[in-house]
Image (tube, rainbow, N blue to C red; front, side):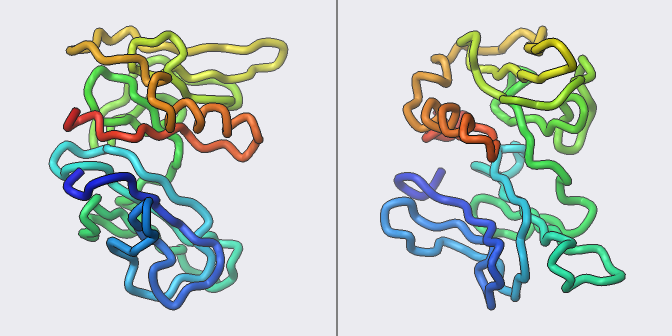
Length: 199
């Protein structure tokens, strides 16, 4: 949130001598920070505000075990603050890239079979089926989880009351376009063009 304008978070699959995981300015592409070491095939990555102790979103990424560079070992994972501070490595880093606004605060929860706080408890219900989408479809700024189970489509919604009122996330053009782009099949959760915690 201290940087003006939008940023882009990269987790690059191609080998990089440095900055295989990086945050860049959206308007110029200038690197704001990057992972200083060599990467081989960063197969997953995500950015979301998980921890209120650090302003803005946290960014995390992991090497893909398919790269062959880590035979007999666990591929590394990294968690960075929005400012580029390395917060955690290894198993302390989220192992999922699915997140959701669920419990009424401005941090997203991780989706690991059910919504889960970054370093805390889980929330009902248990999510069944293959996830199709996460989006604010009812318009209360929290998100619904849409899944498919054999013969049916399910929409999960939170029952936790929100502590404040906000506009529907679909009114944010970036968020709305991310929801549309998800229909192409390589699914990523939608992002907003602003930081909910500072708006």
